Image 1: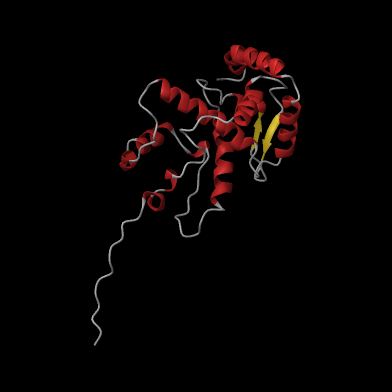
Image 2: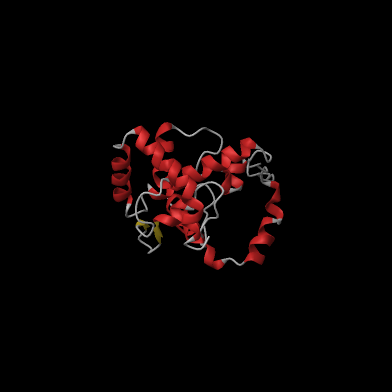
Length: 199
């Protein structure tokens, strides 16, 4: 007779219990030179704000001004988040089959009351790893927004990726001084620029 014993309980690491522990972009490291140049192109306000920069096979579109709203301290357009959702769901298909699957929803299905209840629910134990309100947190948020802008636009799910890459190549051909001037003019005018589109 074989005695049966209960199965041992296993404590799973957070990465297997909660899919959002693995970040889509790095939060603490400084931006590399290439990342700075790429995001500065976007925030230099060069080009028509109505130009499409993102188009997915599912029909999700994103115009230039929507991604310009990723500039630090500006309000994000909900459709910018929807483009990010396309990227996250695309990346999720490549995740390890042994980890819990995850599906990200677009903003249209959420109402403010639901979002508030979720934010205060049992997941409050999970930290977002931001520093306390300080200069360090401002830098984290700035880096996060800049990294997400390029993660979305240069994703394989973006059918316009090659066009974006060509725009980046053209921008990098400009002199460092011209790029600096364009960027500083862009960040001075970005709030008024975005206000014309409803933020």
